[in-house]
Image (tube, rainbow, N blue to C red):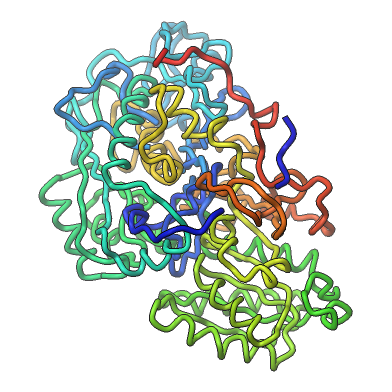
Length: 625
């Protein structure tokens, strides 16, 4: 079916706070991932709109696949196809449909075995290469080499485990279980409420937990966890997203009261939670706003991000601007007088951590080196009480300095006040998105001044969405249960972190330790490049300098069509949508073209009614009948 070229505002909801950092999440395909609290300070790490939670996909020989945003961030043992009722099952990046990375095991964790002898972990591809015969069981599609989930990005099969798994290989791990804790934020966090008051999201914590447990039940039936069942617990914090003291105290309580192997999620605007967990040797996924890669390296092998790194996202923006905007006239501005003038740039960015100014300086320095005329660099803070007052002087400075092109890096709410103020001051420049955190989602774009946003375009790390009923976690949940997910609006945000964890468990094998899981994720294969999910990888792959601790690596180009009609990332019909250039084609660093079809409806895509043929999932009977 052809892609549709086509949000409604609603009452505020505080439920999104529980997903903490949007980090996960950019991930991934359905773009719902973007609904998290993507304000992520120095991270402006973006969220993948249903970002396929970070699951990595093997090469063609081993279709281990995954799907943030998160940011879309899968496993729990096959034998535990029916987890003990006493143990909560659960877990789940549109951002996006980020799923989790499922790389082939490194040699260190999957040594060659004599023909006929299984050494765990053993992937389908490795078994084929070594000539080892395995009884894969019904959970494996042996024609594709992937688990038999009705999901294009399903991971590769791993040999069913039989034998001694080594027992208590790490903290939170026994011979029978793996303790995992899900962090949930308080219901009355004013910062998160501020971020989500522009869109209508009805999912509750109860809905989220029910959805997670059903998905964990599915993962338990299809993923290998080597004789262990995930023992899933939830922890509800009393602190707001930026409360560093409470965040650190929460981490201590979780570590001492639950003694988990891993924690999923965390407060959105402080790294204290992740820092404390790492110091105690506990894995945490999507539990901090994005940080510089050096920060993750200092805490390896415990902390993982699902979204693209803050500096990495800006590198994509710099390359796009250098190749397509610098040296040209501001032809997409709303002010006709700007359209015949050479571009003069201004940079507006969210300052939410000590690293924010340094990131902005590096970004602007790079643009200047590329030949850009940057005359204003203006920070703002995410303060519900002052954002409107901040908008007025920001716009005044941009206008008085003759800025034709505003490069904006920030959250999903501030552009609402800034664009309204721009119209009030009769200032109509080009608006260029770089390292966006939620502002690249249609649900938020509809809340901005439409006369201004009609001139908006830029880089997104989320993927072109597909109708939820047809693809991604929403469709997978319906296939598994026969019902709509209780957390229908936010399922793409909920799943990615758990998806990355369970994929990592499956790839690591019986000897489950943070170090071994790190090797499995960093040395295995990457995800398969696609249109409806971001590309994810960890480790040293050549895309970035040094070791990469963030998931998403690629990006796409979008522009705002104020007249397009259709559903947003949470299935709300409305007018105004982002259009993905060239059907959602994605670019890795160094791949950006020098020309593109910005504001050209031909070839533009807002949403696919059904997945592209090459990404259509296989058809398996629903377990729900």
